[in-house]
Amino acid sequence: MELDYQRFRDSFSKAGLNLWRLAPLLIGTALLIALITTAISKEAYSTIFTNNLFLDSFIGAFIGSVSVGNPLFSYIIGGEMVDNGIGLIAVTAFIIAWSTVGIIQFPAESMILGKRFALIRNILGFAFAIISAIFIVIIINILGVLV
Amino acid sequence: MKKNRSIYFMLIVILIYVVLFFINKNLIINSLKFFMSLIIKIVPLFLLILVLMALLNYFMHRERIERLFVSRKGIRRWAIIVIAGILSSGPVFMWFPLLRNLRKKGVEYGYLACFMYGRSALKIPLLPMFIAYFDIAYIVVMMTVMIIMAVVQGLIINILFRKFTE
Image (cartoon, rainbow over all chains, first blue to last red; front, top):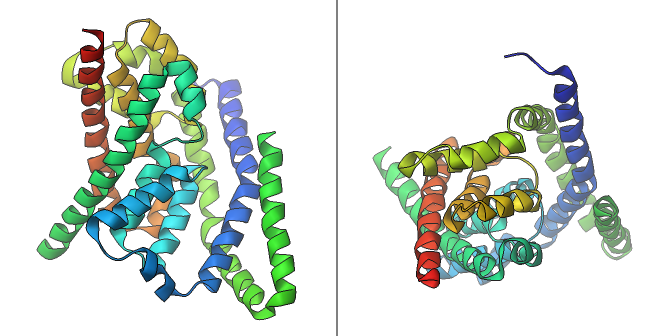
């Protein structure tokens, strides 16, 4: 297969431009994470997340659904959430819902692909974020026991 | 427009820092220390992310994805669509026009949903960042469950839409 140098260069500059555009968002998000992590004590999170399998995954999925941005941010925020003692189930639901449910893109999705499709897809996405999070944590626990 | 909004967001957060500095100096100093440790952790990963994004941009263009949607039948078709979703890059709304074209060509809604879910299941260029924060075992389990869910969601949507059109 022959390498198309022009297209290769274009691919790099497109990727570079995408990352460059993300830079202010990344700096802003990192500053916010730093502020929230420093200002809010780890104990305060336990008032929101109660280690209830369904409630925690629901809250995690809800926050993920209304959050906007590149999934990259969900990994950073999710990682910091785990470091702050928030349960893996809530973080997992949060990360999955962040990328599978699109409240902000809903108008465009429903206009281009149909309202019924967009609605069903997003509702299923939300439900699947909760179900997947529960499955994932159960599997991780089983693997942990086996290891 | 998009770029400006990002800058405004960053400026608002900086403004919050400036205001809080006069209220609680220690909080801001500790936050900035935390911010620096966070930046040192994530910035080097961006070089790797850039290379992976560029490679995907080069190899997985729209025409190739469109061909993959109609090239196989049965389980192979689902598998190829999930993989196409995983390998596709850029924001999801960028793919809406292509998905609409596929729909007009008779591709069922479930396959479109499967592609969109597959996109979310695994972002290869972002893997270095994911690995920096989570265990490999957790990531592998999460990706596997999400790939299965992509197909399950596609199947459910196909069944629902077939019932709607009956």
